[in-house]
Amino acid sequence: MTNIKRGIFIVIVLLLAFLLIYSMFFSKLKLDLKNRNTVDNPAKEITLSTGTYTAGKEIKPGYYDVTSTLGSIKYNNISVKKEESILNYPVQDNTSQDIDGHGKLKFTPSKFQQLHKDKSNKYAVDHTGFYLLGKELPPGRYELVSQSNSGQIYIYESEDMSTINESFDLKTQDKKNINLYKGNLIFIQINEHTSNDHPVVLHYKGKLEEK
Image (cartoon, rainbow, N blue to C red; front, side):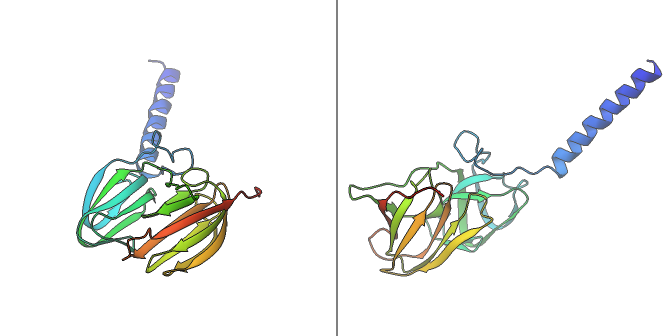
């Protein structure tokens, strides 16, 4: 082997080693609209007990539907009773996932199902979750009606959750008019619900002019 070929071989080996080390220790999987679908979502099903886990190690990053299969749990400070779920939860790479309480949580890749609409243009929200406007819910003008004893609403500018447009608490019989634009992400957290009605109903009132 000539000195030139040897030098090229060494450079290639070093480059491959660098790429391998970078992918193992420094490269992060970013969650965005490109993988927020059932085909490209990197999530993998897993069941976890109480403890603290690191995304990218014990659990793969991705979008998850998280369901309590046993006991009452707090997942990242969100209460989840037995058989209740958190939908479309983004588990970002290299973040801590905290599970407190007594029980188990089942993480399954999100289905990103659209919210159900009845004949009177009302969308029922039965589970805590993240809902993307233009995907799980059409953009427009809404009247939000709460039947939940307590909860919170966060409306983000986009799916990266970098900017909160609006946030407010939920109480029983609360009503509020909100404008939801395409690309907005709405997080609905249902903390306590005891009635037989849907915890939250979004009554569609009409279209909005896009920003």
